Image 1 (spheres, rainbow, N blue to C red):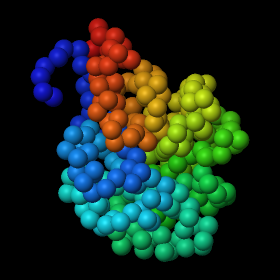
Image 2 (tube, rainbow, N blue to C red):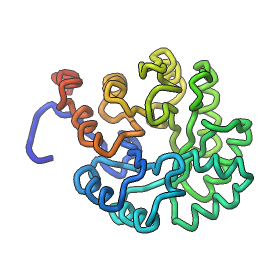
Image 3 (cartoon, helix red, strand yellow):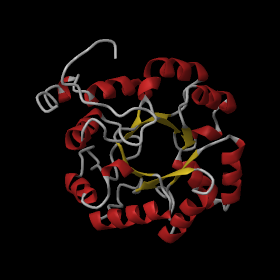
Length: 254
C-alpha cells in the first residue's frame, strides 16, 4: 500500500486460497491486458477468458504469455468445455488444454444438460491433468434449484476433485444465486454456508451491490468472481472499507 491507515482488514497474500478475485476477460487486446496488469495485477488472482472467447481471440498464445509472465493464472470459460462436450470432443478438449499450457480448467453444465454423475467423472479425469474449478447452477433463469440440491451438487463436485466451486450468476449477475433483478437469494446463500466451507466457493458477483453484500456477510477475504478488469481496484477498496459502501463496516472491529 502507498501509505498507512489503521483499522484496515488484513488481506490474505498471493498466491491466495481465500480472498480470491477472479477477473472476467471478455476479449481484451494484448495492450489492454498489459495496461490492466500494470494497475490491477497485484489484486487479481486468476483470469477467466469468458465463455468461448478464446476460440476467436487473435494472438491467443501471445496474450496467454502476458498473463503467464505476470504470474496470473488463466483458464478458458466453462462454456468452451461444454462446446467440446456436446460435440463429443472431450479428448480434443484435453489436448487443447495441453496445447496452450493451461493449468486450470472450468467444468460447467450451465448451457447443456449433463447427468451429474457424468459431470463428476469429467471433473475427476481433468483433475489428473489440471486444477479444476467447477461451476454449479444454470444459465437458464427458469431453472431454480432448491438449497438442498445446490449443497448436494457442491459436495459431490468437491469429492470428485474440484479445487473451487463457482456459484453461477452469468456475467450479468441475474441468474443462479441471484434473482433476475440482481438481488441476492439470501436464504439460499445462508443454507449453502451451513454445509459448504466458504473458502471453497467463488461467488460470481459482477455488480457492486453484490460484492458489497458478500463482503459484509463473509468479510474482506471472500472469494469473488466475474469481476470486470476496470472494477478490480474499486473492489479492493470495498474489501478494505475504503469506499462508502463498506466505509464503517470494519471500523472498530479489527
